[in-house]
Length: 200
Image (cartoon, rainbow, N blue to C red):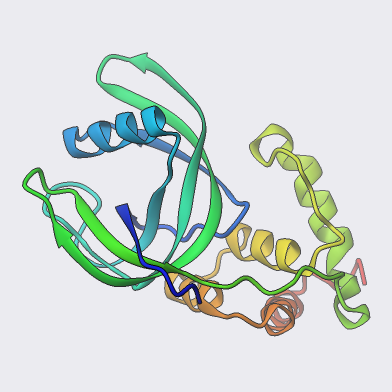
């Protein structure tokens, strides 16, 4: 974990974003429109956290303490007052403290979490790769490159994002630092649901 604390605006959502994951967003609340405008002007990111209590719209929600930085990769405004964004996950962080600004925007002091070094998918989990390649091919532009099938962290994260796993379980897997353990958990899920039997 980083020694330094940085200030980061937060966007609590009912979703879990992983590093390098793609997250489309529709923004219309004034507090978030202002936040996005500022992020685009300063070329900075914002934090995406799973909501622990509350809702995405209206009163400020309570976030889980570990989230992921979102970087804006594209935007459009096809409808007046509604901003369509494409964001990509950056670094994970842990919230040290947070406050609600006058407009309802949640702003946090965060520490960046150290990411494990990248490495190949272990031989014991190699049976997970053909299915993921098939899914990525089917998704096409919805999961744009780079595709890192040779990176265990990337493979595990994409699976967690794509599979119908409960949000709290996804959050625990985001917080998990051990990449191999994450792969083993996902592999067990795939086997229990009969998704690896024909591709192993």
